[in-house]
Image (cartoon, rainbow, N blue to C red; front, side, top):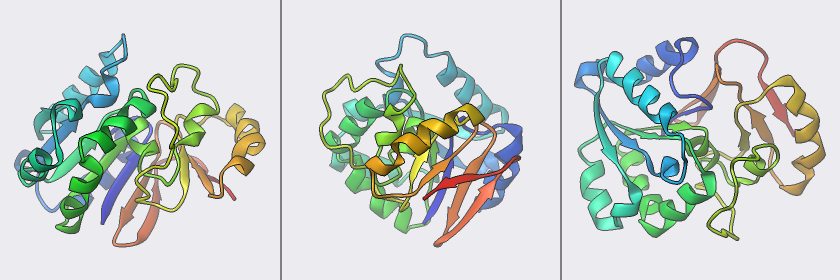
Length: 211
């Protein structure tokens, strides 16, 4: 299983490590760009910035919206890609359609055949076992769909706190007892690389893990 979990996509600090994770050159690499988490957002400028970044790096980029898919269509479509880039936005909205579309089931064979999952913010939160940390500071990340089950995909056994800054340490310490998992904090210039069970922290600065 290959995962690249980020707060902010592919900034220069982490791009080289991501490129090394791939078996192909960017121009030969097909990326499925999942934009669903951004659907309820008024400002979608960050989506365009990430799309532009991927194209600048030379990737073949195809957009996909989980709201318009089902498990059968996803299984067929994901066979055509090397990377799934799950964009940020509203985490609760994303998780709802991850389940309703069958993406959670279609993702498994994609990862088993060596496909890479790249998460950005909401796309990273759902990779953990629980998305609760997104509620601890993100006033804009509201549970607009009334989601009661906050269980994530469980691709890693720790929860993630994205867009971390030093002033958030006290917030994490105040809340981490609410879930039975460690919490790893990621700044916008850091990433977590998972390859065949090995976990590597990428990017500048200290990595914070709260047990």
